[in-house]
Image (cartoon, rainbow, N blue to C red):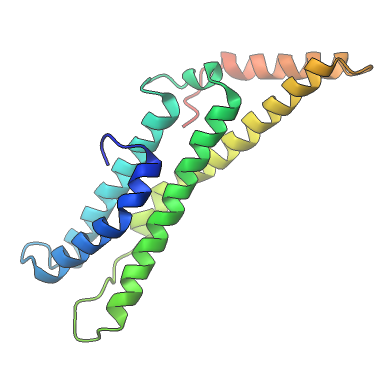
Length: 171
């Protein structure tokens, strides 16, 4: 969770969920819903940080996004969406597996608390994918120098430069 890429974290999710299930079943300290929810929230927060590190390429500045290759950036953003999807899927698979054993402890935690922040992050990521895909498309149009597109491309460049100048943290 701390040093791997989101793609690598996806591969470790089944083992991690199994470990969390064992902690919930066996550990005395973590036998409350509140403590297990807090554990899941911490894992979720670390996954978000992991995604940000992957996207920003170890930079703390949101302006780093503008200097990256749009194609590579979109691929990294999509990896974050896949991580969120896989995380929630493995959580639900583990929850369903526990439901088949009615006498054991169940995963009856607040999914809104656990996944809410990651879902909000993914909404921003989807908007960034749309924005950088559009930029990529306009750059491709600019290379072809089509007749009548000069004013449109000039306006698009102005809008893009104005957006860059605002220095928002896009993540």
